[in-house]
Image 1: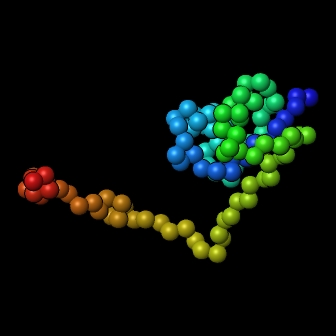
Image 2: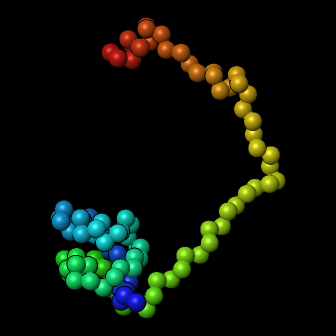
Image 3: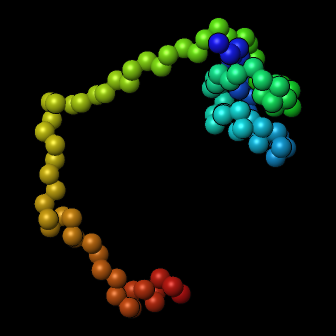
Length: 103
């Protein structure tokens, strides 16, 4: 089994250089306070070292399983049906009103 490390982005990338932002994105982060699990390789360690001031790094035994997604279905209200008249009722633009908007 490969060694894993748990990496958490604890600070924002605002004010960082483009290379630092690219490293954070390369590690798999999109938002602050998110956690990713990566294999402990020299490549990943190098990326972490460039932005260590933004991250929290820990050793991990195994990657936790994702919980099943909960699906919410509201059965108390029936689904609304749109009539054909409401779907096609769009305001048509004439040449005069288009000319007024352009100027």
